[in-house]
Image (cartoon, rainbow, N blue to C red):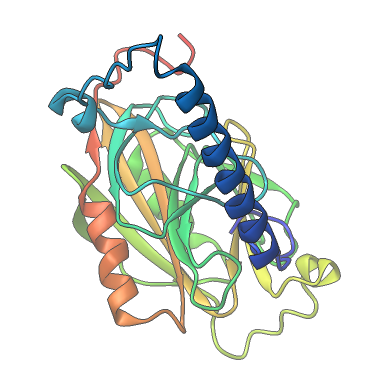
Length: 266
């Protein structure tokens, strides 16, 4: 999904690390108790101010907060600001267990056969041959239907019929892509990198590849937001459980868009 060969990452919370954290917390608590007993005769203890309802309700900003390794996301509503990946601010609500990668890729069970997730991306060109990849890019017109038509005409992928649907509080056109059964991927460029897949596009504005894997579905959601095209790419593997697919849809349904009053960075 990110345009590089999939690699297995170690779990960020190993049992040894958890034990170290627990010992450190215990020592810190004992030290705090000793200091508190020594100063209790001269120092008054002030209770912390209770958390207000508005502080609890304020969405946390998640854009740009992580690097190459997937990092856990706190469950709840989060704000994502306009950027090279999105022409508009939006909010999204995550259940427990989700992660963030590269500051804008949201997924669950990353690097596993049951992985699913999504990200926003700005797309202005696709490859003429996704098997060759990094070949001749085809410039795509600015409207939402220009991109849908270009994906339907792109060779190599198997496309479902465009579906009119909703993404959060906006209308969208969704087109599902997968690799046809029997397609020989060993002759494709990505095979040299150990990846069985097709390279559908490279987004220059977002510096982002879309690699369609051999064992799943990539759904391209194309929106017209105040006259500007915005794309969301969601994906899941064939082994993804129905309950996880329902959770992915729940997250996509939670998206609420702002307004595009200016270009990103403008």
